[in-house]
Length: 273
Image (tube, rainbow, N blue to C red; front, top):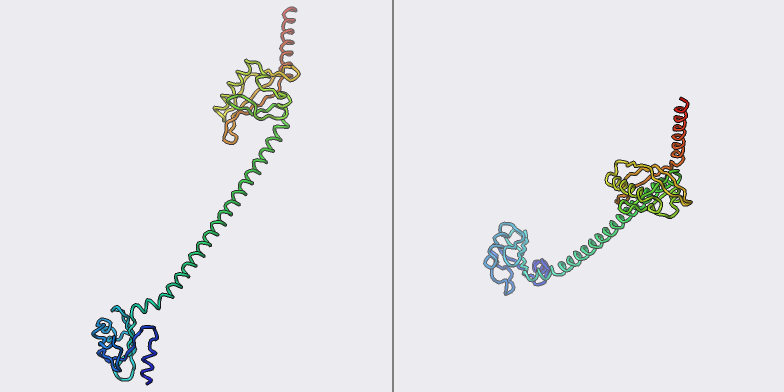
């Protein structure tokens, strides 16, 4: 009875068949009709492995599991597991593993999406900070340029090289131009000379360009004389020309007066001689 209970409880898998066999694989206590044939005949390859001491074998279609009894007899408890039973037993595990794998995939995708989101947010924050720093630098440089130009005694103009139109100017230039264009303040001859100088400065921005005096009409109708200096600049990827006009009206008047006095003195000397 204990031996039969051991046989029945040896492998509780559904559809498993367990029997006690001798060294030749023949049933010792009788067996079900499907196991009446000796195991050595039905499963020759698997039985050969078990006879050599293996506790299991998958050489055949079914799976054989053997356990020596240790009773001094070459007898073994052998369980035959049909492939269909094994597949049936593994089906829940495979379904569970599929669910676990699916959950892992979903979690991995969620983590990847979150990582991409936070990375994009970090990059956006970095770009925003970089843009703010760039704008701060531009504001500082603009404030410096404005402080230098607005307080300058000379007229400072930023003009377009193609049309010679004024795009920016300082306070001194605004007072003198009074909303007028350069064409309205200069004679046609001076304007043509200025256009040629602007073109030269735009072609070679590293070399300042000097030209003859320009006579510009003030809002009150007074003629003012300026000594111009031009240089090409690249602002925001665009070529412009800066014109600095130094007021030399009084200097030129004094030069004419001195020249007149020298001529008078020279004429007087000749008369006396």
